Amino acid sequence: MEVTIERILPGGLGLAHAEGKTIMVPLAAPGDRLRIRIERQKGNVAFASLVEVLEPSPMRVDPPCPYFGRCGGCDFQQLNYPAQLEAKAEIIRDCLRRIGHLDVVPPFEVVASPNPWHYRARAQWQYDYVSSHLGYFEAGSRRVCDVAECAVLVPELQTALDSLRTRIQQGGLPDDVRDFRALAGDDRVSLSPDPDEANPPEVERSIGGESYHLDAESFFQTNVDLVPQLIEAALDGVQGETAVELYCGVGLFTVALARRFTRVTAIESDLAAAAYAQKNLSLAGLSNTAIVNEDVARWLAKNLDRADSSALSGDPKRRSRQVGTALQTDFLLLDPPRTGAESRVIDGILQIEPKRICYVSCDPATLARDLRKLISGGYSLDSLIAFDMFPQTHHVETVAQLSG
Image (cartoon, rainbow, N blue to C red; front, side, top):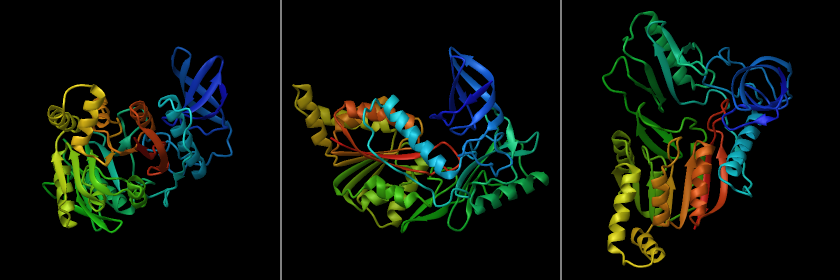
């Protein structure tokens, strides 16, 4: 079947229509005329594979990576870089309109990465002991694509990948390891598991004048070139008495919040990450922040119960205002995982009634879902900005600012 790609959808697939079907095609560019093969169909929606590019779009380029199309890591290498940025902007707009039910999306930009290649300072490599393959899962499968050189890794991680591959040739890796996590610090790489150490080594990463200690098991933004701008956009000039941060990780935003607010409470469910957050605050000389190692939803429920029990009974709206006053939150920042915030977390935020909210998201679809709930709960979306933290993929980081 021959089709013409109309645009890129959330998830990175190209959209086409033919023979009464809505067709999704991976690795496509808007304006491509393609020969495709239908692989599966559900109703009038079909998922296809690309057989041949009959007439390339002006946006199409030759992918430099020899693994592109087989490796599941990158899915935008067929697009020139301006086209990648525009596709991500359209993905965000599509999600906010279709999922978020926003009639008007505020104007925003997608800030380009200074380095569209060799930017990734975090990686997870899959290892298949039987085949001796080390790399990433192939697209749509659990087979390991054996990758000798990755075009998006920072040089330090490429060196670490080379070292692991050498160990495979020498028979030096255990057969029970299924994956390796790697993180580049300022002066060394943390690897988990590390063939030479019992625990993943701690590294230091300097960002915007602040130092963060962490290891390969820690979550941290992968494109460090854009992190200072991301932090500034998230805080957006705020300051005041009290701030709450949900899903604080190792304290990337927490340190900056502690420099701007009198009191900060930061919640993180992972014990090791919470410990690093406390260490990073201590090393920065900051003692005005309470790091709470607890599930975010559970922490909200417990604190709302305490505030509610001390508030007067009566009109629900009045009690909600009293609960918010009891918790006294000027600014709330949340940076949840890709799945977004749980419904009970959004409900808890609405009961706290912070004056301002910043939502940092790596998935436009779950962001739009959660923004819809916050807006329905009385907040307005003041501004958006996006950062291309993941060039050569359809993923994008978005910062939304809301006020009540």
